[in-house]
Amino acid sequence: MLKKIIPILLSTTLLFTGCSNGNINQNSEKENIKLTYSNLIDDKTQNDIKNILIENKIDKKTSDYFIKLVRAYNE
Image (tube, rainbow, N blue to C red; front, side):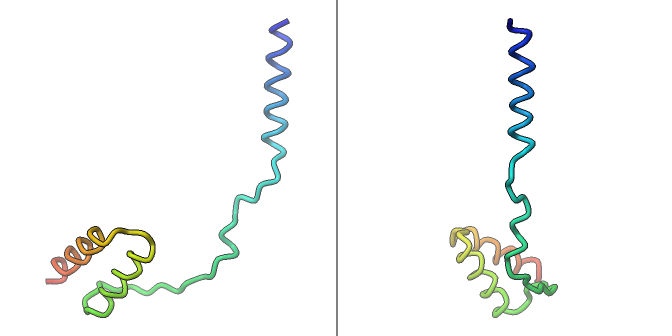
């Protein structure tokens, strides 16, 4: 009896997971942003990056530390 139930359960599971209608690629609706290379040498760019980090829920302490590392690298 158990030998008959296991293949049926496996087949049913594969059938339901293989026939899902989910859209995997949902990033196509997002706006494409053109990126440019920068070593963040000027204060304006550093402040812009710091604000972007904070807006994206990176805490202030971490973003300050990142800017500190950038400034040390550029010295």
